[in-house]
Image (tube, rainbow, N blue to C red; front, side, top):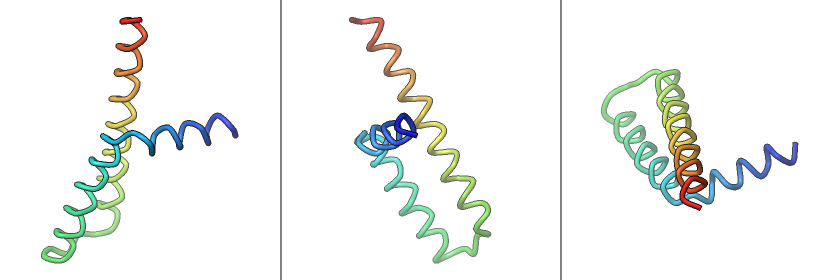
Length: 68
């Protein structure tokens, strides 16, 4: 449980993740105002962004480990 908590905290502290979620959030809000999109698609987009950010963070961590 502690590992999951620390992983979530680390994920939320990364500024690139915050930027990506902010952009996606604004886009979802804008699309929601002008085009009715089913909530399942909004959730799918959010999960896709989270998955891509996790992959990016893992790749960055591996690159940093190799450089050290």
